[in-house]
Length: 504
Image (cartoon, rainbow, N blue to C red; front, side, top):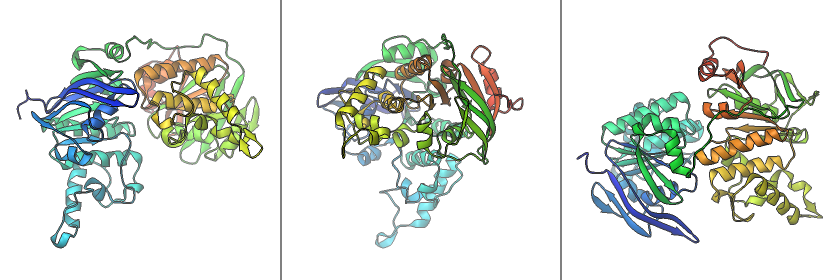
């Protein structure tokens, strides 16, 4: 293939929905063997552009050109047949089917009389899985796999066709560090085969590690393309949001209050052991560690989703027993979970009902829910958190990731907690909305909340925390103040170098 001819080119793509011009004459191209990042805030038009390319939406104007041939994509299957493979952020797998059946769904090899050729199906699948270096085979039931391994099944689909271009939409959101390495190796292999890669991610470190060029959308319009090796994170950010961000570390500029939460020698089976720490009113304590370090499990134990096997929890100096989320809420602990779509929201419900769901039993007028009280709560936190939505009737599933996260935070703030736990506060959120969430966390601390932030992103935990607790293999290894912590010290601590620090 001529490297000068784009593997894929879009020209002047326009897409309008009722009241919204989602794409306004967008042009974009990816060369054979190139990894081309597509970036922009949530709502910038990235997903709409990719759905046009993937045959889910039809453009109102513009052209799609594959290997210099104009094409029309009427469905995802037609797009795939033309060499365009879309690996979605949201998994689209049939959990009751095997890995092989999912990978070749709609294209199962057949024998005579239309019978499925199971031996060929499994051989083909296992050949692909070997390239991905996964720990399961063709016969595994997809529903029995972890989310990370299900993501690898999605990626395996891309290897079944003669792909011209593969679109990766936030592919590392559910992957461990080891699985990310394998993914990047797969992407490199596709490059060597001359496949063009469109890479959508909010993670700047990934963008600068594996991409060749970066194109930016803002408000449905194309804003420019940069060579990755010749640009900076600040330049990309400014192109995305039209302004610069303050990415410096934050530290408290207010007096801390009394100890709101104290944990002593808390253990939960093999998940974590001898965890001791405290959080004061007005303080942000960050938890940082590798996947499997036990951070989320600690949060779930504090919120009553898991029963501890040893240790004690103290709130306001008083030992408490927490056996359920209802116990935690009643005692002033709220948890914003890491999976906001699966655990924090009901996407088919409106904003008001999501916001007031935990307290709907208290908002009654006789046998009915008091709608006026619900709307009043929604309006209060919409204004307080700057949630951008036309009104309370908007379905939460139609909001951007940043505004969805604010709905979850508002839901728990409306319960008036003293301790707020936020697990992966900005996962899947664009850089502009990340900044807003970070500022919100700092503002909540300044208002007297005791805040725990669990994050897999080092810049984030460094930016928002007054103290950082590093974890490795279910134990606390070090506790750092914002003044003494460095990236090198933090990396050593989460790698288990230097033992543990029980007096956290």
